[in-house]
Amino acid sequence: MKLGDFDLADDLLLDLSGPGPRYTSYPTVPEWSETFGASDATAAIERAALRTSEPLSLYVHLPFCSRLCLFCGCTVEITKRRDRVERYLDALEGEFELIARHLGARRDVVQLHWGGGTPTHLDPRQLERVYAMVSRRFRIVAGAEVSLEVHPHVTTFEQVDVLRALGFNRISMGVQDLDPHVQALIHRDQTTDETVRLVEHARRVGFEGVNLDLLYGLPAQNERTFGATLDTIAKLRPDRLAVYGYAHVPWLKEAQRSLEQHGLPTAQERARLFALALSKLGACGYEVIGLDHFALPTDALYRAIDDGRLHRNFMGYTTAPAREMIAFGMSSISDVGGAFFQNERTAAEYEARIARGELPVVRGMQRNADDDLRRAVIQDLMCGMRVDLDELGVRLGRDDLAATFAVEWRELERYRDLGFCTLSARRVDVTPKGRLFLRRMAMVFDAYLRGRTSQTTQRFSRTV
Ligand code: SF4
Image (tube, rainbow, N blue to C red; front, side, top):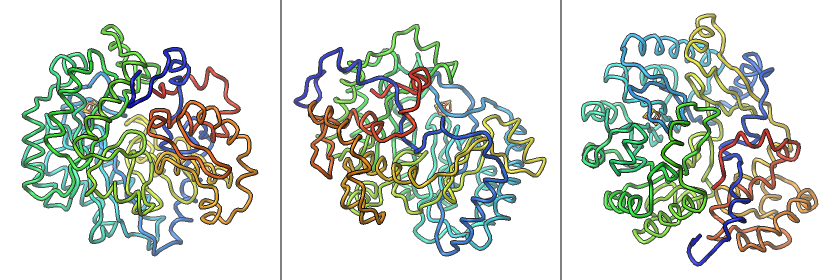
């Protein structure tokens, strides 16, 4: 493998690329319990309600798409029926009402994000209806980040205009790969022209931030074709890019199994594709952020590194304007009142529970002090590419961190010897060579992995 000036033997890469969490949360979802239910979630929300002056982040899950992309890892429902969408929106409205009841006066929102699915599967009137659900119950403060994900193939200029008029200021578009052969294999129709026109229109009507998502590790991708995609995308100058490694988890997403017949890139090939993104986007002025994001130096995500506001959550990397997030819709995950909790993963269950007047929580976890400490360490590593025990100790009021992490520090010596990090008695810094193995280094601090069987660990996607 060639990654900058760095070569790695095949067998070592194979060993290092084994399964592991993406750390969009710590503790990770498999540690959460189904004994955590609606009453625990209500208690967490009511604890959060006491901090009336602190703003919130909100997430809304709109799960609909008209066609399934075979690589999709999201919780989606494929439908073309408008009445089906309306029924879901009725339930969503019910959930807003249930949660708002427990939130007291805590209503300021500094970040609102709609994900899916494809939020623009909704028609303009339905988009307005969802926005009204939020704005009737929450105060979206001036300067808030209001964003959503869209699929350019199904998104019209009219929808973009409506969204902008509602107050959306950031738009994120799925691209994955522009090569027609790759697109055919993954069942995704999306011409380059559609993407270009939508980016240009979003800018024209005043969206401040445009984000594009690419995916490496798909069938038939190679350095030539992915390089061409990167060149075209870089010319569009999106403010941010996410270049995700495709997570192949057919035991969770059955449709992904059909991609295997075309041959998936090996760990070596995946590493080369990511290295190509690093070099091409770096040459075009993009700064790499954390595991898989790229931003122009003018973008808030890049500036957030210096301000210490860069944060990793279920949406990936964000500027973390709020500490707590409440999520609405099937399968969505909240992080509030010191707890994580997730809603029912099927629309039928989600809608049935709302109809019974219950919060549709299916699993969750109340974090303890050790969870919060390790969460802070993993956040520092995944966001800032370093852990400084002195700085962390001041932040958390702890003077025993070197002793607490003595075992982890010894484990990091292996990565230091491979050139993935520099290590002193109280600080670890990930090197550019180590970026690809960030998840693996974060795993060192995951207390729950120590108790796992390898069979359980196998359920995560590969780290490279
Ligand atoms: S458009 Fe997005 S959410 Fe919908 S099926 Fe494709 S990848 Fe999944």
